[in-house]
Each structure stands twice: as C-alpha cells, then as structure tokens.
Image (tube, rainbow, N blue to C red):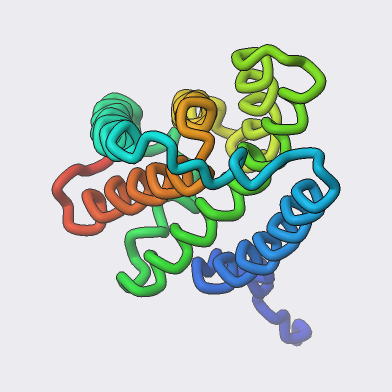
Length: 202
C-alpha cells in the first residue's frame, strides 16, 4: 500500500487591498515625519508643499489632468490584452467600495509624499532642473513598482501618470493636487472595470 500523499497547499497569500492600505498608511506617517523634518530644518518650506497661490489654476489642473489620465487608462486598457496585465491589478475591482477607496487613497498619499514630496523636491535642490528632477523621480517610481517588471507593458501604465504627477506638483507647489489626481485616476479606472463599463481585451 502506498503511503498517503498530501496535496501541496498554496502558501501564496492572496493580495489584500485592506492590508496593503494599512501598510501604505504606516509608510505615509514615516514620509510625513521626513517632510516635517525638512521643513523645521529649513531645507524646504511649507510653501513648497501646500501653496495656495493659484486656487483656480489648481482646480483646472485637477479636472483636466484627471480626465486626461482616465482617457489614457481607458485607451491603454482597450489595446492591451488581459494576459499582459498584472494579476494584482485584475483583483482590485473584486473588493468593496470602502476598501477600494481606503486602499486607493492611502496608496496615492504614500506614493506622492515619497516621490513628489521628498524625492523630487530633494533632487530639485541639487539638480536645479525641473524636468531632470521629474524624469529621475519617474525612473525611481518605475523601480518601486518591481512587480510590473514581469509584464513590462505595465510600465507604460505608470510612466505617463508619474510624469504628469511630477509636472502637476511643480506647477502648483501643493502636494495635495497630485495626491488627489492620483487618487481620482486610480479610483476612476478601477470603478470602470468593477462595473464592466470597460473590460480587458481578451
């Protein structure tokens, strides 16, 4: 009689937007502490992060950038076959609306605080070239999304938005603007998929 063989169990934990949101929130506090340190040590000023010099311009940038990035996402999704989309991205729409909103908001908050608030600002202090700082930050942003390296077409999906977020930040000097555009773009695309308004190409 052959010994009983147990079936191998899947030890890979499924991606959880709620857990990821809590991790992003924790890192957001660390980024906030670093930004606070930059301000109190006179490396940067509060005006670099929360300028309200041109509120109407900020509203216009938020509206047009969000619409433009949503259209970019819809067009890209229409042409990229589903097999080239990262599996994690496919699972987002299955979550509840509150979970999605939490995950998308803290994700956008963390990434913008880190990449635009800290990295891009510090680079600009040394490089003194707006676009070199934006491009370098975007390269680091791409490197941060290491899971997309297995499906390189996904890198287009983050490169263009990252360049836009960097430009938005230099135009407004208000970190809340790229955070909001980032959040609205992610939520918009996810809800379009969740309610089958757009679908992945087979």
